[in-house]
Image 1 (cartoon, rainbow, N blue to C red):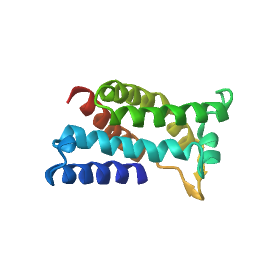
Image 2: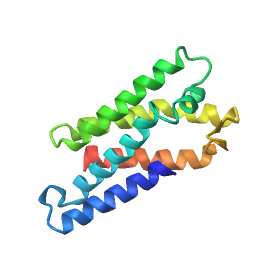
Image 3: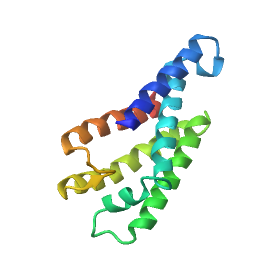
Image 4: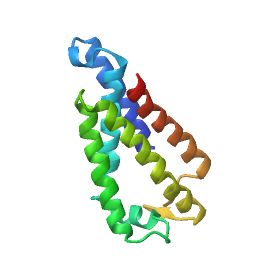
Length: 146
């Protein structure tokens, strides 16, 4: 739920800054880029900090080197967040992040089906996770096509 909160709060705060006179944030498109960037800084940093072991456990067992995959996806999320902040690369970054989210979604399904717990709590159920994924991918696509 934290990524959704980061997306909504970051977008709202950026839009408010735009309404208060920050020209670079004057519009929903630029505000959404900020919200997505904040979300991906949050999720990307988890690949290296407190949730790393949980994320490694989420990787489907048939995939090799889960630790390397978690590192790679974390780097891509952080690079994508940076790309969202630069107007010249924002659309490409958002497209890449949308594809990355789609590629990582099976790990969420696998974790739910295996009944994993993360930080002592069950992983997000597949239905809820699917709804969240739709929101996140739609936000990225709104940046791509907006």
